[in-house]
Image 1 (cartoon, rainbow, N blue to C red):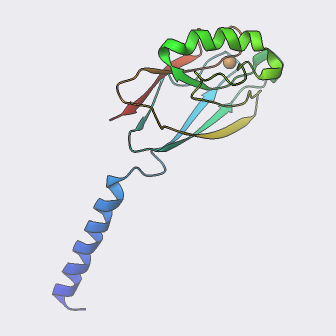
Image 2 (cartoon, rainbow, N blue to C red; image 1 turned 90 degrees about the vertical axis):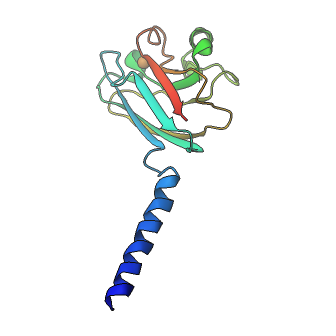
Length: 155
Ligand SMILES: [Cu+2]
């Protein structure tokens, strides 16, 4: 390989890098969050770039308490819908995993997990915008008031 060919190869590589970074990497669209026996999430803020068409979220319960006593889920909605979803979820009961069946205000939600368990979901960001204010929360009775945080689409 002569000097010029080497240089051209280097430029070609740089070009490929630029293409890759212009679309969201799978990593940027993957989120992890941990909940514990003290009724806490480990973060109050989650966001993904607007280029993520699909988001993968993994919820881990790092505690040891059983799901019936200290179950957690991760529910995503517009901020304005959070309280209503939590109230209706509590009424729906444990059999419904504290999310009312067919609740169209819910953008995405995980099943309930107990201590030592982990669950992953993926959901579409279709219809979500950087301008809208979203919240994530746990809809287990009594948890949403403290187990919540903001979720944003970064434009
Ligand atoms: Cu909870």
